[in-house]
Amino acid sequence: MAIVGMAEMRKIFEIIDKLGIHREKIEVPLKPSGAGSIEMLDSGIARIILPEDKPLNEWLPTLEAELDKLPIPREQVDYDKLT
Image 1 (cartoon, rainbow, N blue to C red):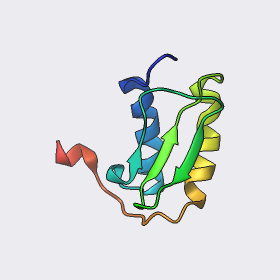
Image 2: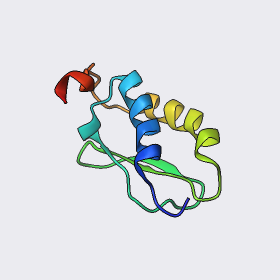
Image 3: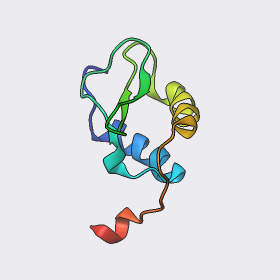
Image 4: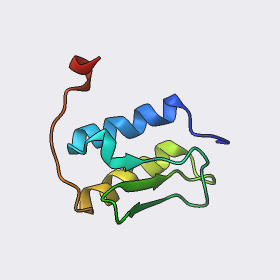
């Protein structure tokens, strides 16, 4: 993947919505890098860098497991009702 598009973002949104992480609490750079990573920034935002050398669908379970470990406040938001 050369750049993160809406198809990839929808998959990420599915995971963070399921975990109850507000979409404003994540940051996803548009350029994938290396094996991918998830880190907590000092601002309280989780930065998700998608992998460039592994198919996204194979990496999504890692993303979910790592996000679930982070100290991010959880809340359920029905984004379908907001649009």
